[in-house]
Length: 110
Ligand SMILES: [Zn+2]
Image (cartoon, rainbow, N blue to C red):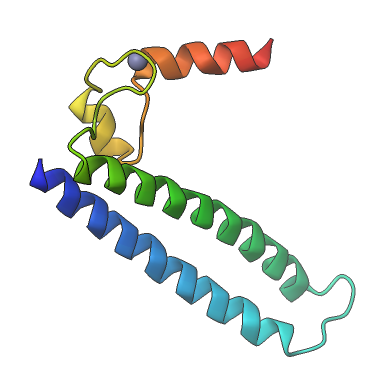
């Protein structure tokens, strides 16, 4: 169980470092005036989108970490079954088993 916490903390640190790096790069580009059509402008948009994704990911990892600290990490929030360890390895912040996740996504599409 403490292995999960260590893994999630490492994941969190990695995402946080990436966020800091992006924020720095975005800030330094904001200071220079960019013309319409400048490739740097496109780059900034791309970085902002990436930053938003990373922030969402960080929240998900923080949440998974809070579950791990309560000893309920790796249990599907929908059906209560254990989530496949291979899945958790690939997506440490997963809170649904593959079956529930797939079902949920199918429902969303309808
Ligand atoms: Zn499930």
